[in-house]
Length: 458
Image (cartoon, rainbow, N blue to C red; front, top):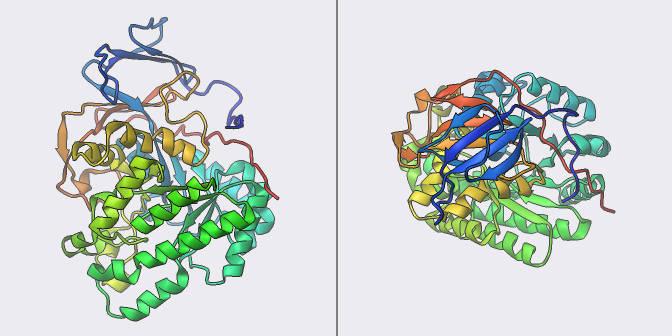
């Protein structure tokens, strides 16, 4: 990985000594683990370290992991703050063990110019409690600005298929040129991969659909075909691709095959695509209406296999809240999206508790592998030189999900009543205790994520 551009010129944070935590995944060595953080950066990790006079956080009885990286959230701010906003969204992130987020603006004002992106970064920095990256929007009108935006964004977000707030693109020639433009600017594309023509065909085939048919309206084939085309454009143009919210076994197989051919293709999924299936729509109705749709149990299994194999890198929430009154509209008029950033570690830990993922894979998918999937340095590891982002939790303590008690403005959850473990007891952001005892302790203080320099391709 190339050296990163620093987001600040001085200290990155506070001093802290975390003493006596248990490691995760649990290992044969039962000795307690200490983490020494100086100036917001991890200085040492090991057993029986000296505190060197730093403030001490006693962690006996708790398990320690790195702060989580959620690679895909929508906080709808600026523009639609009434649906979430950075104040509620970043508070929810801390509640879920997340200390870094990558955010997609899919409502106006879009980030289609350097001026617009700079204004958005200023807006977010004044409000975010967690570190953040803001994706630029990849549209025909943003092509002249891509090179100027590239140093300020982890990637360019492209909606190949229409979703909440943005329409899809039906012209393959336009899409190919957008891939080529991203390659020239030197940043990867993160793609909402659903084929727009197939989405429109699905609407025509199910004109009176309900939530139980959402997975047919937005079919598995729509995602698979879009991923297939996107991989072909990667090979043709030299672009890099990260497929967001992978929802099908078929897309996982295409991504895995592309990686084995040496193509720069990565992917992430969401907890909803492995913990829920289309069968749950009978119970959840529009609460489960998201794009791409949640598919079958076989797709659940295929995604989990891809996570275990490393073909899909990360688990990100696609946190996309809407008020419950909007979700309770008739299916055709209910917006797509669900909140879950405030539950990311408990939901990921649930995959371990159910035996669906091993502990190391589950943890990496929301920490080290998640950061690497968008080339984000200094995040996702408990190691010297990395940011001092730490989560402490009790793996034995359980709690039922109550949506009304979560930080999100939406006040509902598709996981209502589910008994989960892994709720963070303490969250440390660059050496500062940001969340403890169920309370958010910081009002802002999040910083733009460090980024590797753009790598233009011709």
